[in-house]
Length: 414
Ligand SMILES: *Cc1c(COP(=O)(O)O)cnc(C)c1O
Image (cartoon, rainbow, N blue to C red; front, top):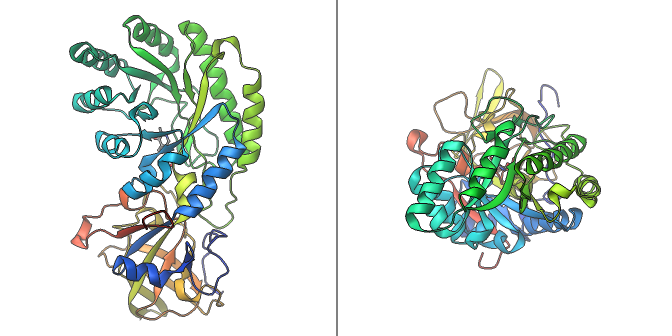
């Protein structure tokens, strides 16, 4: 439509129906159950289907971990826990949420700047601490001595390469994350000599990559690096966490990751393991790919207004709940997430509109000049691909509108 900007692809599970249906029920029924809008709805069936597909695609020797920072809703953690090999957490608060849903020996705790209280909570619980520095290693070992508990410690490596084409690069340069690869073997020897339970390596090179070839290249380089470091340390790592980085389509032209192709290549890479890794298991840790496409953010149009010939739909939700959809969470250029009028999914576009929230800032744009069927006050707008980095990555206190509601649809008890 004339003057319209593109928006991203609606996940196929939601596309095509005359009105938006989630886990077999029309969106209006979910809004009634929640008590109104704004509402985040997560379709558990879609999450389970993605995990089943991923499990089938990955070699048996690779465990699938869920990085809970993508979506730490307690009901979601409880439903996902039986379907994955572990949870990865990045704060004491996330550790508590994870422990409510998952045995401690399947939880690992990464992240720079862990405070002594957080380290002690993890060590007492029996979770694995992914060490981010030599200083953190000293503090963790001291806590082990003081409490008489043998700490489970892995070493996070700052790799000497990065995930090509990833939206968020976390390797190949000076970094607050992990320990520079060259210094890792010495630290491993120290940890082992101190009598700690050394769990292996954690190597995370980037996030939101859609290029399957780049993911495969990074995984192969990660295996090679782990083998080299293990050889230099003189110890076989029980687990090599290869990181994650699988992206999802958010924007026009984005294509999904070919997980079957990635799994096949990884299987070939791991089929003939070097002696340094004989007996190691592997893991990939994903957040966004597991939950991102399963979530939809529903907001209601409060006001429809015109200015200088443009139509604005002012809704009851915005940047304070969904920073990422407004383009303010680590994006260089603002682009439109997939968007629809929830009650008119199959109707042709009739006009170009900008969907905004109620915040007094021009940053609060959920969709910028998109082509949609006509919507009036009272209609519901759906923002798709909203299952990851939504409420937990948004400034919900900003301007005092309060948090969004969240519902897990399609799991037992929902
Ligand atoms: C954020 C993060 C993840 C998850 O990233 P996604 O892009 O959501 O898959 C995994 N591992 C680590 C170490 C992280 O910091």
